[in-house]
View: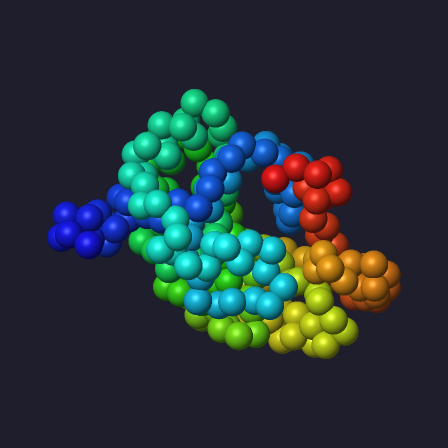
Length: 209
């Protein structure tokens, strides 16, 4: 890698882009809203049930100038969702700066395992056992999205809920491959613990990206 490219990456002006697409947000608080998804490659968290494992190796995805992405977003959407992989592996200051310049809302979906960068209108924190969030990520999260793959995940969810700020929205979401088994348990759990709400992967039910 030449020095110029390395400098652009460090400044967050060029990042490995796995995919970008305009769709409907399927999960969490903004479920149902039109959104432009920007998925960056690279992840060192590595969930066994991840449905985008092809995002893990950043070397598989082309380094792309952020200005080119911004030009596509600004002509399409008013809400951008930055995701991965694990997007906080990268410096996200520049992309959020440019999105805000174009009056585009900035949302991020992250495990919180890396230092925060960027200025965000909404932070969806989804902690993973393999690499827990940094304290600073718990403090600024707007939404705690806990994926429930098995019964033991309820205890993990409660431990994570104790770490977020008091205004953080608490969500339980069935992992897709075990949804038939776990959804009834989540329903019962939320009825008994109404501080939680249910999040569903509605985009999968709608068969959209």
